[in-house]
Length: 302
Image (cartoon, rainbow, N blue to C red; front, top):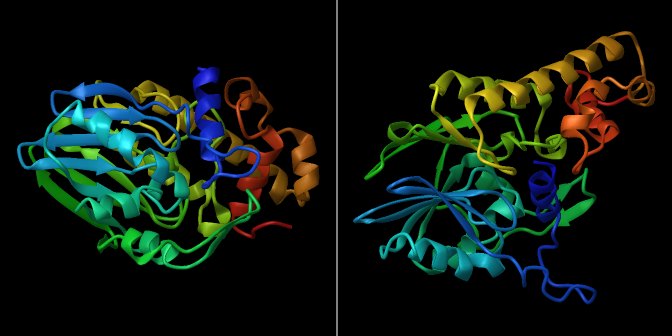
């Protein structure tokens, strides 16, 4: 579990372009396929997990990772169906989920997202936690169809409902529910096996993440499969473990913050310590996650 979580944590921070030190950070990336149904599969590579559904009319793709991987992603989809990709849904704006937008639009795909995803992709962004500037995407990479609350696709896999999770990982998260296949794509509201990154500079919050997870849990039956933004395929029981960690850390931080402690004092008190062994060994440290939780609570950072 920790090795898998580490892989997805590392690829989230891969450079968006080649550098002199690492001219091709994607050279060894392969796309792995996990069947979820006869017409639905999870794809893993570098960046956020993908889900692809297909029918005789074409394929529907959730997220598209990095631009250099588009050819490999399309090749993996080509092993599943000879139909072209028609629709691409971005779960949020981060570059490891939208990097292939321009390429796929050039292949004739129609791009969909929440309103705030297009808004953020259209202008320069700054991810404070990563200390990273992200330039605006070219016009061809911007979603053509956006929604504010929810959106439903009617495809060969049945009803695919997308709904907004406000101020969760970001301010534009979309949760994708393949209703008739009992599969949920959580986007980056879930990092399974590691503390989640909450992009507070893009409107994210711990309360929004918890609300998103509770909304997904309400959709689950005993056999529901949940595809996290990063990490391995999950069961409802594992979703419960994730929710227990989120709520436990939040509650512990709230008690200390309400007592008047500064962020440094809260971190020193170790409010996430009971969860560190299971969740804090791969990417974010306990102190880093506590900082994100503290900053996103009402009242913000000190």
